[in-house]
Image (cartoon, rainbow, N blue to C red; front, side, top):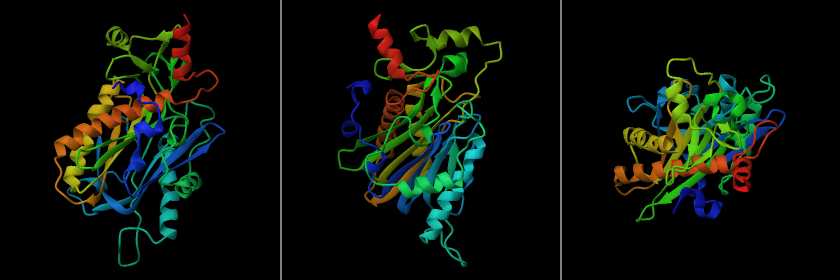
Length: 335
């Protein structure tokens, strides 16, 4: 089945299909920009793989398999470029009030890695996610189906900026999940703010990206023609969270994050550029303790990531001067 046909939340599932994971969003509608928080009841083993060359992150070194802390308690994704990392402080305050954190001699310390997208080109760049917005997102977290589109960290997202911001379309936030034959699950959430086009991996059709007239620009050709010229491509990054109820070590979680990047590369073209901060976080709750074949888990995670990216763009709404992908495709169908 083509990814584009998977439009309903019921069909796609999402990150909250993993028991113990809750997702919350908060948006500052003045710009817009926002925060998405992933809370993990009981914590989770985590890994990360950063492949874009312009990342903005917090506490990612802690996730290396060689480092001490085994479990994290939340993840924060935010707009606002590096300013948006402040949102993690609000999530730490929320968890601290509930006594949740890594045990120490002086009390629990919440472990909250974070990553940001650069969305300061949308509206007033002085309006940025802060600790208060992060706290609100944590308060709103629930195990309900994940709200998608122009929500949370995806509120200010755009895609297809390789040919300039004036030809971009709206990005967004999407989620999807897969179920293994034995009942275990792997799921993904993606915030899509890419320099490149977003495509349906099954058909190769462009879903969102750089506009050319009433349709889409051929970015492969544009890259060939621009290979000796500076590319005007600020304001990018795709952030991904994959989660599973399988029991994994930190090394295995890191490998899961690496494999999940395949889904990002299938759905975003080009991906992992010098102008993106593309990364994947991986979470393993360990609710199912039986051994798992990591190759199968990683392959399904990549599929869920690709679907989540497509959904995030297809479900996004427009802003003045930045149309939603659905408006561009509707225009094409009327010609």
